[in-house]
Image (cartoon, rainbow, N blue to C red; front, side):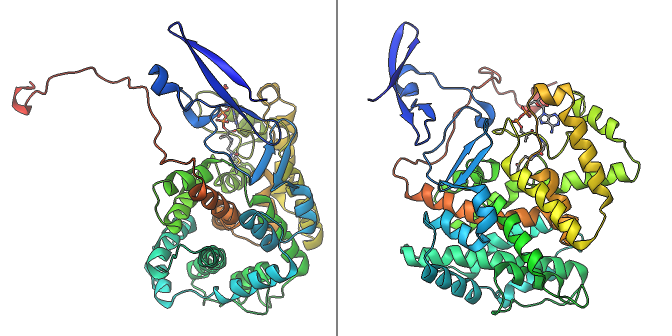
Length: 427
Ligand code: ACO
């Protein structure tokens, strides 16, 4: 039976329908509110606002649940590959063997980069952040690959072109920043192995592709592949709602991800740990700085808008951390610090009262360090992983008959009407 809520404004009663999701989540449909009453709702940061119906990702922040198209993240991390998970997110179902093979063939075919695009890299300043380069390069793809036909099969090729080329572009950015020769993708290697080879062949000598590292990279990217309406995904949807091309919408998502409160937190965590390691700050000082309301510093890698318990991705990431460090027989001094910070924060009343737990970024930096990924590439690693989610969300948005151009309202609190005074009369 359809449910309604009643809202009384200025003595006038308004009946609003309730929308219920497939897992029982409820939303009040306020689309008629302004027209009927002249009022709008006020919700900075959209903490209480649903902006779309979505069939892609389900999260329960109280129970620590994350599922892509209904499949638990734990099962995907254990048994799937990044390419298969990307297919699941974008197509909405797990691929058949034949679909998976076809996807791999396209990913191989699309992996080289347009020769003229390579020239861009040479002209960036040597210390340019790879996220800035990546965002610009993805936007530039619209000019180099203009064939965006409105036919589903061609759009599928566009999605795969993006997924394939972002990997080549990212590895290339790293090598050029080192002054190293670019390594081209190899058709005999799978998606993750190819990336590692493009990054490290000739930089690590001799370089051998390690199956455990390939598996770890698959898991890392699966964990990042989608997270419903977060900051960067909302950026993709908002920018896409103006009907701009997909490359520009994804480029906006990359820019949004870069910030330290979002995907840039993985780099911020390691910077924070390094500062403690170099005696720039103690664990205690770090925790007090994070708690000080007058200090903008935060305990990076802690807290989440949705999760009010352990982030299920953080649990898997922590396990991976142990496995990789045991395998490489490396003792990462930052691991002890991260563990001490976690223990201190979880036992501190400030973090307990505010339900602040480790998020995916708390341990991801240690995992990436164990893979040999340099710190300034961390957020790029996140972006490669998140790409299938952005594509799936963009695709859902443009096909949704309910969607309109994103155009929120505001409560104006500026000056009331005042007369213009010419500059010479202003005193
Ligand atoms: N360290 C210290 N205090 C924190 C932290 C933190 N990491 N996170 C939240 N708080 C405090 C806030 O100061 C606020 O306190 P107040 O109620 O006294 O004002 C309270 O907890 C609620 O925090 P908000 O910022 O209002 O929560 P919001 O949902 O807006 O922000 C966010 C979530 C941005 C993730 C926040 O927890 C944070 O800044 N974390 C650190 C950065 C980080 O790790 N980001 C990655 C998130 S996961 C991802 O995007 C991939």
